[in-house]
Image (tube, rainbow, N blue to C red; front, side, top):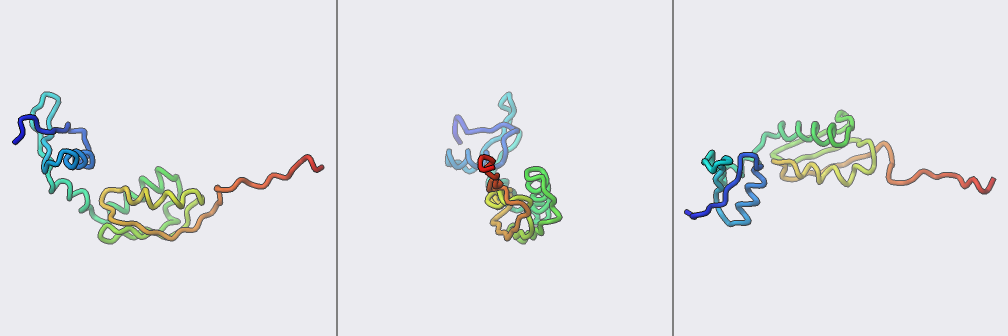
Length: 137
């Protein structure tokens, strides 16, 4: 036991608690309120629970937070299959600029072990449209 243990407040995420545990090389972190009263203890089991999310929960988060909230795109155009935390996506994204961003966003979701996808796109927004040179007329 340490005389000055590393502690966190109740607002700290599990991911931030894990980073703190790694940085300080401790196996658990007490959760305390603003007066220093012990509320809980975050341990290895709590950290693993993040990665043991049900597949349907992961899929729902991909649809709501990435496709709808972040990209504002129609989720019906993308087929999402999640098996054991591995995400496989196929379908059409609205814009070409979404292609390099979608899989890193999916991989950042708690519980996702890996993600792969095959996408097409409706609009190429990575190139400026050709504008005729009006000085020739």
